[in-house]
Image (cartoon, rainbow, N blue to C red; front, side, top):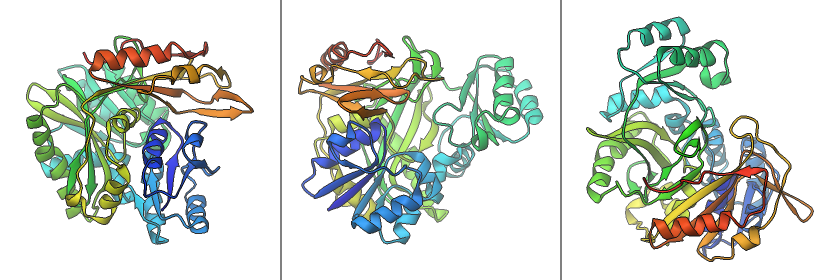
Length: 420
């Protein structure tokens, strides 16, 4: 089978690494890929959002299955374009990907399906949004750009002035472009965050292992939000009873509501949840694997993921079961100095061979390229050092031992990744 993975980040490296081991794969491509993915697949210089270029490549090369990693091409309709040309793809259509492409749409879905979430309102006008904030008696409050903002469109405002500034940034200054033309304002939820994933075939859902990511840039969850500075799986708080509750009250109602709207969801439905004293509450839906959550999930997955992805596409998930390592997985992200604002590009990274000497460690590349024999940092989040261990103490020791072997003075990382 000739398979194409779309994307260039750590998530796509983890997916390509797992898929490359499948006996179903004759040839694996990735567009556009990165220096690490090039060790697993043949990289082709086509951007993840170049829908016409990707469709043309699939026609020319006889691609039989496409796995779409990032959210932007999903929301833009890549799966629709591929399926129109007869190329099966893993991921939701543009209509179904609206569950991530519009936070307002996702909130309306929750209201229709009875999915527990925070009280919310949607705004286009900054004055109306500020009047709503002025009437709120409790802080903090959360202001979100409605559309895709690369994980940076969310502000937890601890007082009204912070909230007003967040409203102006989106609606007046247009800091998030089209993604911030509308905003969602919702009550703040307190508790432990959880990333919950399920494979979906439009009707049925197969729960995957859960994960937790660490979004703040600094130790102790300080500083601005990022795309994620690390992740762990499993999550100690997720019991079988809680998993059943999430499936019954969040995932299955969402699938049913989307099916009623003629937006059947196929692919990975990712629920960002807050485990509150009243039970799990939805923060947001995403229409793809998380990053860096995919790295720890793929490390723990024993089964071949490709048959499960094919079953999700074909609507036969009921026939699928997946096996997981009971071991803990922990990922530490190395980012370029200046991230998440203006990351420094072009520095040389050394020592990866030493760092990966432990067979229980895998280094997933997120923003790297080759310049001759040198490995070059080419973005914000650059590497995801991921380790397995019998428990979190062992996984953490292995991951940080590998991190300490990497020679990259222009990079930084959090030192406190692990369960609380």
